[in-house]
Amino acid sequence: MEVKTSSNSVRFDKQRCSFIVLIMFFSLPAVNAVWPMPQLISSSTDRYPLSPRQFIFQYASGSSAKSGCSVIDSAFKRYFPLIFVDYLKAGGPRQHDNWFRLPLNEGVFTVLVDVRKADCEGYPDPDSSESYKLSVSSGQASLRAKTVWGALRGLESFSQLVYQDDFGQYFVNKTEIDDFPRFKFRGLLLDTSRHYLPLPAILKTLDAMSYNKFNVFHWHIVDDPSFPYQSSTFPGLSSKGAFHPSTHVYSQTDVSRVISHARLRGIRVLPEFDSPGHTQSWGKGQPGLLTSCYKGSVPSGTFGPVNPAMSSSYQFISRLFKEVASVFPDPYIHLGGDEVDFTCWKSNPEVRGFMQKMGFGTDYTKLESYYMENIINLTKTLNKTSIVWQDVFDNHEKLCCSSLSVVEVWKGGCYLCEVRRVTKSGLRVILASPWYLDQPGPTHDWARYYTIWPLAFKGLNLYLAHRCQTDSVEGRGSAGFHSHLVLD
Image 1 (cartoon, rainbow, N blue to C red):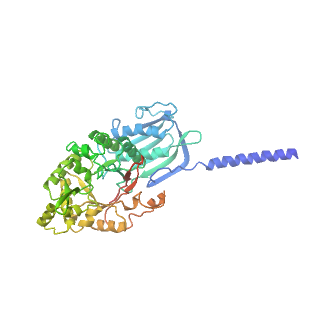
Image 2: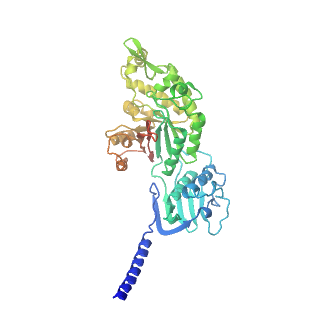
Image 3: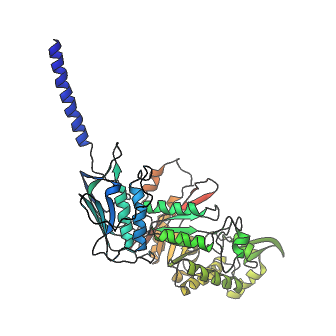
C-alpha cells in the first residue's frame, strides 16, 4: 500500500512536471506591444536574449545618414537607457558611446539603421515621411526608413519590443514590421498662458510625445491671463503681461531649446498667437492695441479685443509675427480667431465710425472678417500657412474663405456636420471637439475617446486633432493636448 502510494506519487510528480513544462512552453506569446499599432506586424514566440554589454546601434553600410547625423546619433544615445532600463541602476556606464564604433562581433546584437535620405540638420515638416520597416532576427535588427524621422519611429518601436522576464533577462522576439502613420499630423496642445509650465515640464512632455509617436507640439503660448513669450522686438509684452517678468517667461533661449528638443524627436512646434480676442495680456505691454470700451459716451476704463480700426494694430502684428516667423521654423502659424466678443467694439465710437466708412453697417462679423483677412494675408507674406479656429469660418463662410487654408473645429454639437461644411468648401480641418478632457463625462472613461469616428462624413482633405483641456501635472491650472491627422 505504501509502495503503491509512493509509485502513484512519483507518477503524479512526473505528470505535474510535464504539465508545468507545457504551461511554460505556451506562456511565451508573440510580443505585440508596439504603440500605436503598426500597419503590419507579425511576430513569433522565437525570442533572443539581449545584454546591454553586447548590444550596439550602427549605421548600415549603404545608409545616407552616417555617424555625425545629429538626429540619429542623439536617438542612439537616448534609446540605450530606455531599452535597458535597469542598466544604469546596476552600475553600468552612464554613457554608451560605441553605437557605431564597435565591429560586428559574434555575440553582439546589432541594430542596423539604413536611412535613404539624410536630412540630419533639418526640421520635420507636414510632408515628411515617417514610414519604416523593422526586421528583428537572431543577432540583429534591421531598420530601414526613407528619412531620419521614419528611423526615429522605428527605433521607438524596437524599444517597445524589448522586455524583461521575471529574472531580469532582456529579450526581443522575432518580429517583422512595415509601418507608416495613418495621419500625417499627430500632436499635443499645451496652454502655457492660463498655466505657466516650467521648461523641464515641457521637455518631458515632448519626451512622452515621442514615446507615442506624436509629431506636432501645438504651443498655445499666450492668451488673456498671461503673455509668457519673451519677445525681442516687444520686451514689454512679457515684462508687463506675464505672471512674473523673470520667473514665468520663456526666453528666446528657452524657445530655441524647446524647438531643438522637439526636432531631435521628430516633433514640429506649432505656435499659436490668438487674436483679436484672448489678448488682454497683450494690452498690458502694448498701449493702444486693445479697443477702449465705452459706457455711454465715456470710456469705462476696460478694454476689449484688438482694435481693428487702427492701422497701428496691423503694424504691431506685422512686426511681432515677423519675429515669430523667424523664431519658429514650422511652416504653419495658428492665428486663433475664436470667441471674439463684439460688445466693446459696438460701444466704441471710433470703431462704429470705421464700420460705417467701410460699409459694414452693423454687422460686426464683417469687421472681424476684415481683421482676420489682414492677419492671414500678413502671414502669407512671411511664407507661413495660417490655421484658425472654426469661429472664423462660421462667421465668414461667405465672406473670406478664399484666404483660409486650415480650420480647427472645437465646438460641440454636430461637429462632423461642421467638418463636412469646411471640407466641402475645399479647406482642411483639424477636429478638436470630441477630445476635451475637462468636459462632463464618466470619470476615467478613456474608452469614449477611442470610440470617435472622425472620418464618418463625406468630404475632401481632413486634418484631425484631439484638443483636450485637463488639469496639469502640478494641478494649478489647465493644459491641453490634441492629435493631428491628415488624409490626402
